[in-house]
Each structure stands twice: as structure tokens, then as C-alpha cells.
Length: 215
Image (cartoon, rainbow, N blue to C red; front, side, top):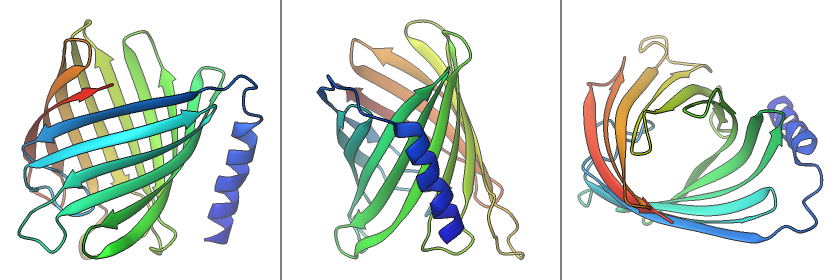
């Protein structure tokens, strides 16, 4: 654990450098509704949900809150994800170092994870992202994922992800591998609609229809 955290903070020190002298506070927010809240850590067959987020940034740093309703029949009915992080672009690659804490309305503070993502624009239409997530409270936790998004035109885009548990895993279940593929259409200046299919070697496939707005 100590070695991995040391590497994470060392990378942060190399990436951040000094904040811009004329940095300004930036605020973004949005909301969405989905027919199926797919949570890779819990279930592929989630309930319909209302979701929203707000994020503030200053220079390379940001802090954000994302929230979602859960199954009203379960003990927890609302999930809150609190995130802090920093962005830094080196050459053509944008790095995102973050820490996210997961909190629930009934059971309270659950757990947290460090994330390190690298985004590269192959062209004006194609973006690739690699992401690694590590939970220091869960021994052997390490999730690795590759995402891609391709803009067909100004309104339509296709995107997908392939992720795997690259840390320790239970031999009787095998290493977990998940993927998703979806189509997104922008609506007006801020709206969007997304249809997405999900599958896993440990879960039955499912799909979700989502719509939202980002500001």
C-alpha cells in the first residue's frame, strides 16, 4: 500500500507544478435521469435513477459532488461521491489525478479510491482514455480501464469502455472483465440522450437509456 501511494503522490508532484498566476474559479453542473443505474461495483441490474453533479475548479485543481438515487427498497436510497483532483497536460496528453469518497444516506461513509487517468486526442473526432483505480482499504484492489469516444458529427457520437480487475481476484470466480458500448446524441446546446449496453463475464448483459443536461 505504501509503495503504491508513494508512487501516486510522486506522480502528482511531477504533474501539478505551479498553479497559473491568473487562475479563475470555474463552475460546472448537470443532471440526468436513467432507466438503469449500472454500478460496476454492485450490480448490473440497478433501478431507475435521478442523478446530478456540481464541480468547481481553480487552476489545475477541482472538487466535485456527484449524487444518485438508489433502489428505494434498499437500506441506502441516495449515493454521494465526493471528489478532489488535479489536471495537468503534458504534450498531447491530459492527466487527471483524483481521490473519490463514496458516502450513503443511511450507512454513511463507505470507502474511497485513488484514480489516475490519461486522455489523448488521436484526432478531432477520436479520444482515448486509460484509467487506473486503487482502493487502499481493499487489499489487492486495482481496476484498469480503456475508454474511447468517436464523434460522428456535431450531434452523434459512439463510445465504449473495456475494464478489468487487474489486482487480486477470487479464483473460483475468475478475473472480472466488463465492457460497455453506446450511442449519444446531443440535443440543443446542453442536452444529450444516450443508449448504452453493458456486459460482463460475471453478470448478465443489460442496457440503459439516459438523458440529461450539462452546463
